[in-house]
Length: 254
Length: 379
Image (tube, rainbow over all chains, first blue to last red; front, top):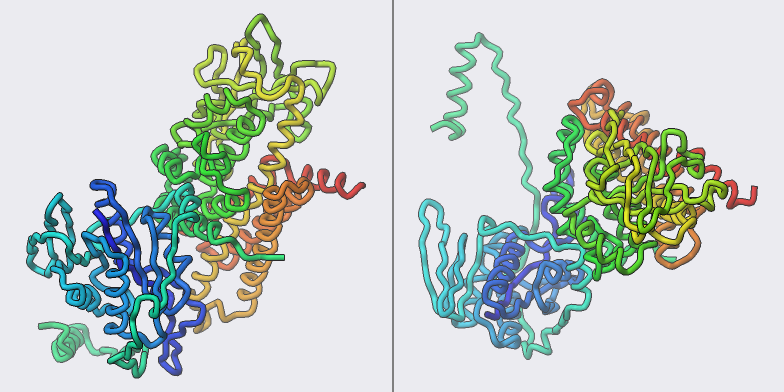
């Protein structure tokens, strides 16, 4: 069972602070990490490999150096990594085309795995776009995956309902963070991962001509929350009534 | 000159940090309060490679360098001093002596169970009347036929009561002082080997500190560890290596105190603003941060020397001395930043303060470190 896992390097969103005067996020010094849900996808891939054998390749498209973070995935148990360098302004369209080209170059695969969405932009588009470009079936939002010999059965978490689906190989699956608990590599695995191959591919080497982003990020602004600072100082019964009234007006109480 | 950690060292630091945040920090107060020895935790740590860090893979160890060992120990001690000292004594002393001085047979026999975290190792030098003056130990070992017969009492032995294997230093030639001491491997359950009192300590209460009693305790001839009469010199080598590790432990506890202080000072409001905005508080925190950085560099440099087979005795003693005294100051200031709350068990500061005191005493007091350094300075 050969598996390609798409894993994105993102800024650690929990470390972002917003400049109170400009409302702009301060990105300087914010550490990079592999998007959490993509780590779940890597964990799932390793578990499938442990059961069926085969090879796990992690694939990342990044405009910044991703080697150090990708090594963590190799230490977890992935066999090989491919890093495709992307232009700074790459959008979903560009990245999905680069991923598709890289997956075609990797070639022999049964499953393409990824997180349901990345923790920084959370669009959830990459899986569906990629399945379209590769022309293979897709199962999104999987919270359980059973890879059998000639088919995969997965439970999709779609809010109030769980849908069980099956598909032949090759198939693209995106997973939710509930699917598993990503393992911590042991110190031995960290040392051993130093010798695992990391292939760095350029756009040109994938035969991809210039890609023009279809989307432009106009502005990124922090959401500011301001308190209304309303104080009810009348007698308690009246104050409660007024409070309930205003909460209802705000749509907090229905 | 390069102060940057290698990618592997960074990865090890990150993994151990994540493990400690998840598995140790949440139970650290309980470990201290209830004097708990969480075996499951040590087994998990064994799987991660933390119970045989610098031992090569062929004996089940992780095979990491000394600097990585210090990084790991800092992280563990930051989460819990009790777990820190247990892991340190196991790795540096218990396992360290068997690996450094043991024969191939001894290494193969004992190390795999110890490095996997299935069993804990202890190391017994100190006696009721032999602390800093370690060469004055009175425990004796006499060869009778194919067996060594050990008699004496060991004191303050970390993990002594739960260890499966204990390295015991004993006199093999009473006339020769330091040059008449040898090391022996004693297994738990050997007739004549008993656990005495357990110490009721100020801090590190989740680590075990036991008295060990040897009464006509017979061990096979082949349990002599290293050369006969070379045990004291061997023990001093092992202590040399352990010193840097105690420095790393002190840095870890001080770092925990610093992080708590930064967090608290930004939240605690007095006189209409966070106390972090007051220079008096800032300076305490700044001094902590600066001194921690200095101590960490001393620890890293001593470990670097060790990794490159450059003599490190003076540097290791300096790292331990400075780091442990620095950590005492830092944890004291951290309580001060927290005011009354810092004095209560609601916050971990009092635990850090109690725990870190041992770093000025264990594996050579601050005074002994100064003695070691003075000699190296030719005084």
